[in-house]
Image (cartoon, rainbow, N blue to C red; front, side, top):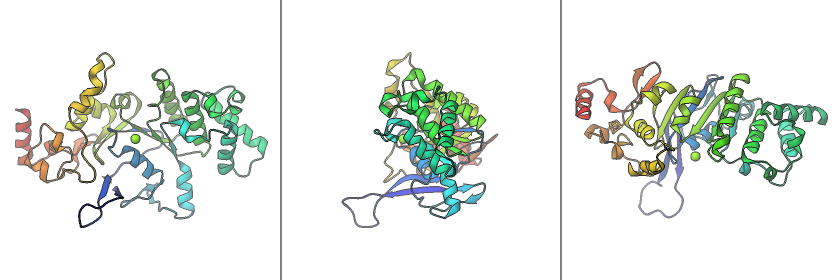
Length: 331
Ligand code: SF4
Ligand code: MG
């Protein structure tokens, strides 16, 4: 039930409580070791904020994050430090996450020293070589003496994955890990993350705007809209039998390289709402072709669709009002 509200700074136009951005609203999600979960949504949907909340980069407003069932409190001593180490964030732009004037070896030495303080310099160098081999940067010494700008985006993303591995993580939070990279090398990075998820038994949260990649890459897919999770389930179900009208819109507007104008179709279907003053009821109702009065008044709960698949949409309710809603939507 994680919620994050950011205060809006600057001029207050109206009296009353200070406005807040409802960036993440009552989101519950479970990650499992050895499994990839895709978190899909448009920019501004709150998916990056959720990943940062899970990494404890900033405190949550309400709700809690649990590791093995036990709540982790910010700055809560040893348990918190273990958590921060176990959960590693991999960002979209690898160049932004490296000191540009430090050779790769210096950055990796620091990471290894933090996580393996007892090792000698030679032992640390051995660990670094092993980490670079795990991300297919071989021979390692060809990369360690380079500066970040001397590597390609793909090579540097591999180094950032190696740095994350130094912590012996349980969870990778990968925020659009390939969208800044050349299309030709994306699959190689995704395959590397897939292999590491299996070999190192980590849980991977794959944050992406690309629902098509979720299908072949992730076991489960969760869809976020305007700060809320609106559908979740096995990727095959969510992408092939999408239940929520927004998920269907995402799939229909996924760019198809054979149709160059496709990238504009999403914009045609409307814009995501303001999160300072989100729509009442179902937050998707201003864009939804199936919206009825109930949608504008009441926020839909999760409706189970079987096999771990659920959607937050009144169309899947089990009362008479939902039945007539379905008839109306079908006509
Ligand atoms: Fe559309 Fe209503 Fe379902 Fe929201 S609850 S997605 S507005 S039909
Ligand atoms: Mg983002």
